[in-house]
Amino acid sequence: MTVSPDFADWMREQRTAMEYFLDRQLPAPNVAPTRLHEAMRHATLGGGKRIRALLALAAGELVDAPRARLLCVAGSLELIHTYSLIHDDLPCMDNDVLRRGKPTCHIQFGEATALLAGDALQSLAFQWLAEESETQRQPGQIIPLIHLLAVASGSRGMAGGQAIDLESTTTPLPLPELEIMHLKKTGALIRAAILMGAHCGSAPLEAADLQPLTHFANRVGLLFQVVDDILDATMDTVTLGKTAGKDDEHQKATYVTLLGLGPARERAEELEQEALRTLARLPLATQRLEDLTRFVSARHH
Amino acid sequence: MTVSPDFADWMREQRTAMEYFLDRQLPAPNVAPTRLHEAMRHATLGGGKRIRALLALAAGELVDAPRARLLCVAGSLELIHTYSLIHDDLPCMDNDVLRRGKPTCHIQFGEATALLAGDALQSLAFQWLAEESETQRQPGQIIPLIHLLAVASGSRGMAGGQAIDLESTTTPLPLPELEIMHLKKTGALIRAAILMGAHCGSAPLEAADLQPLTHFANRVGLLFQVVDDILDATMDTVTLGKTAGKDDEHQKATYVTLLGLGPARERAEELEQEALRTLARLPLATQRLEDLTRFVSARHH
Image 1: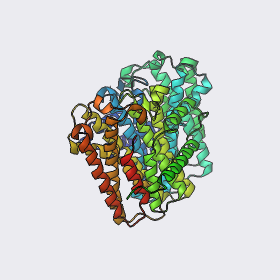
Image 2: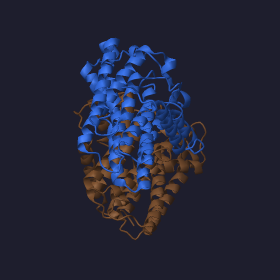
Image 3: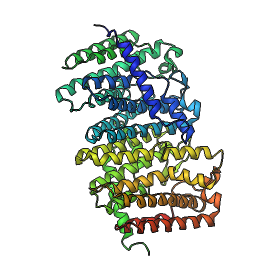
Image 4: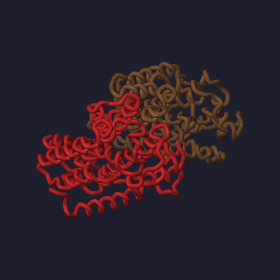
């Protein structure tokens, strides 16, 4: 099986819709405080693969979710992801200068403004979800989305994964701990994207569907990270749009440094196949999620 | 009129309840990632005046709000306030070493962990509110609370006020702009505390009550800041539990530097009287909010 013939078009359309949504919903650059709003827009707009948004949109299609709600959910995920990149690039973390092919937020706007831009993007994600509820008058359907996003972002999700990653620079992690770290650091938000999309339907998801979907989401999260490690070790900075070779320079434990390049590629193949097999167990039309799984596996940046 | 004879007891009881709630609800220090959870607990527990929590609890008493919901709301406000203090103390912001009489979070745990602890506390505030909804099965009442907190924290609230404050260190603000900045930086969360408390009743607040309550909340927010500026200029570091004389050192525009100490005290007196007059217009038992207004005005740290 290969990627659907219309997948590239679908992906382009979704990204355009996402960019339009984010551009329109973010505070305008001429609204005070202008420098803060410029920094928030600089980091969020005009770049990014929008993997989390695409996964949420594709999962929403499984359950015929209303488009407006899906765009809001996908937008809130992109805000959380962007805030995490801004903070991750700060000098006290990865100290990086390039992101999405542009200067990082603190290089462009200074550290203090970058810190605040990340903080404000996090608040805005929850604000958007609360406002979507007001529009739709279905608060009972929005609260689980807010809960999924908050848990995925917090100390037992993304922020927790970053904390484990910090500690690992002094003591390298063995492979099982590396996978636990990634299930949180990158995996938590990717899992939340898929589950939030699937929770946007008018009826709650069946428990029998939720379990394989969660398993699928965890495999895609790990797959994304293995491929990220392979790309960091093999591609150049211009192609990636962010500094390449960072993991090696920072002596980080990665799939490549722990396993070597060949076995890391085998692990990616294994995760892809497991993800696709899990999808096949769902009694739903999962073509877009299959396409995205192959895309995450075969991406070059 | 003076402070009620039982006010000191009430305040002590509320603070004890708040501390117990936070201690129990925050992730335990032995839960992984332990260093991150220790940092979150270090910054949140064992100190702080809990003004925002007290205002929310007092406003909730106006409308006979259920105690469990009030504690959750007050706790979420303290998490947002604590995260803002952690980030505000970082080297790229105020670069401070002392907070609540203890080493600041980044002095104790390093900058990267402090950054993540602040980020995770923000997520946790929204997580707690979403979980309170699950317990109470009243999502329609929780969404407005989440919206109030998100807007108050974000780029048009607290984070926005801090961004204006940053810009003011290069160009000092005239008094009207100083008040606009403070209405956001400190005022937004204080206003949210009072409105969130008042929204915890079983019935929505009457528009006729909401307008004076909002006006009252804005006056208390400014009053808090004028007194803060006076304390920074007149008290010592040990009494404050944070570095004194910072405003002067950083050449910040404050009520004291713009008006002088005498007129700043007159402005505080004026704001206190206006706040109390506004409360008197409410057809509700506002004794605790009156007490708190006098306390905010007369506090020594």
